[in-house]
Length: 492
Image 1 (cartoon, rainbow, N blue to C red):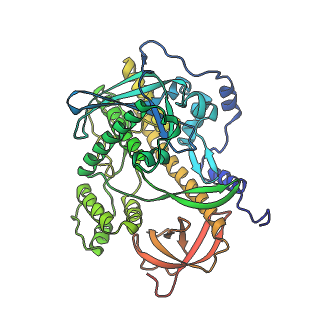
Image 2: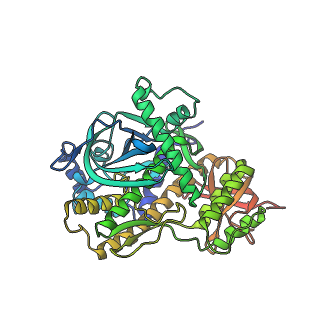
Image 3: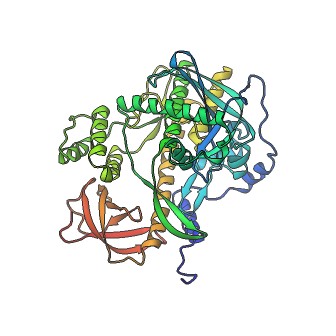
């Protein structure tokens, strides 16, 4: 293969940088940000009122290549079948003060952007992967969210406070999940540590109980199989689905519980909170129609419990095609957004998670809303005025929603550029596809190998989200991330 024909990471990086600029995102740090970062020499030291939790059996669980570690988890058995679950979240605010150049950059982008070309971090890597990351073997400041979970998986009491923590083992989702499922030996960091092994098995047991309770209440079982790039050196080799597993469920359930505890804490203290909400779906009727086409009946009005029952039935009946159904439902549910809950009022909940109280507070190295929430929590803990007024928070909610959507568009577009590189020798081939978008802006489909979306450029009339269709690849443009299909004759 010639040098020019290879799928180089650097090519995708240039594409990603251009797309970032096009979407009002900053691909690089300013001189002021770099100078401030250079002046930060060490991690923040504990002060008055900070509890010492270094003795707990803390571990981090994340992707194998993640270095921006936002949270640690630990468990402790209590009487009566209860379990204490503590989530420690990196105290980014201890080093990133409000209004400084680093903070201004983070507020501009509001999120790290994870593309097939690489990561555009919200914070300089000296912070996000080192001084504010909860790395293995280092002592760090954290916000502790200390919860008691009952035998039924229900969150009982909870307490928030600042603490010093120390990560005992950096673990990866896939390796830990394989061990929990009995398919592989214990991961290296815990192989000779029976205490950590027992603690992680306890965490897994609690998380599975919490998951069962959430889904009983209507949390949706969805599997959209997001694709991750696979490189061989600098050459893009594939885009492979990133599947769910038990280790991811530990983090998912504990973070949902922690985010709920933070939201309730701020309400109880009388502070405005920065919520993550997902409204009842506007295209519910299309979901009803999809269910009817599969022999099931859903109520006329949005009902999360009924939808979850339908999803579980379909997962059992057709596991091979469940990811297609999941993706169609996700598209029809719509996007989440940020909103305020003012004192004395109640914000909308999160339809997909079936929770009324939900913030974003567990990833401040990666998301600006989490940093905002930490500052509100710290003010509440110290009995000080909120660091933002309600007008500022309302503007930030709109801005964070907009920039999160922009970041998602960049991530999708770069993924399409990567897929276009992989597909450019397959023009004229036919694929089974799922319709994932249908509006006056256009119609989109997803194919499975590689897992990617493209646009239907003609013959799209009558197609709607959730339809299965046979398509022909007619053109690609890696530079612009265009992948174009047309339905084949005989079509859907």
